[in-house]
Image (tube, rainbow, N blue to C red; front, side, top):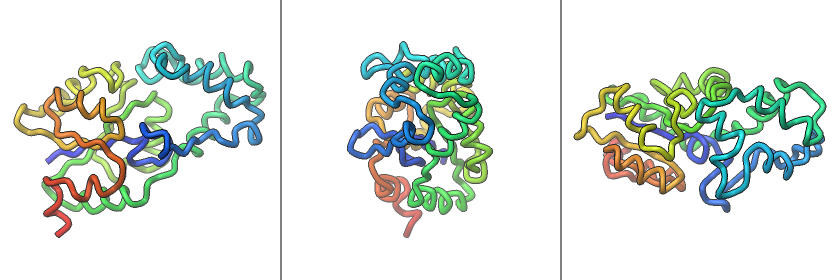
Length: 214
């Protein structure tokens, strides 16, 4: 069985599709770095409903380099340090692992017939940070992310590319946990068995996994 996990909103407590569950990484960015939080959000991440035109979207789809994009924005929002230092701050602040989910993943990893993967919307630098520095490579068999694939997760070609890379057949129906219901629905179109994640119980109580915990 192949099981795919989203990162932000599932493995990491930070951004979540449900605003009530979000734990923003940049809450103290003005005190810590002198950055105007609202201005940075708008200039880099865009406005709600128009994210696909943002600099961040270009980065997570592999069209732009994160360092270059940040270098264009940071001087406009009050930051005077190096781009590399800013990225380190960002990645470390946005690395609050969900201990309950990580424990479940660790238990699943002990099953010989399971392969565990990440399916996530990331640009190249943070993807490498998550895999190497944060150590997710010790828990998962591979990472598939949007900048490497060249399509955002809200594009069925993202999932089709993974199907092709792993030779996933039409009747295999890999499990998938993601906090965004619309992405879960899209994955279903690609033949995946998706669940909209809100808590670790969504993993533990999944019908295809329930017997594993018994």
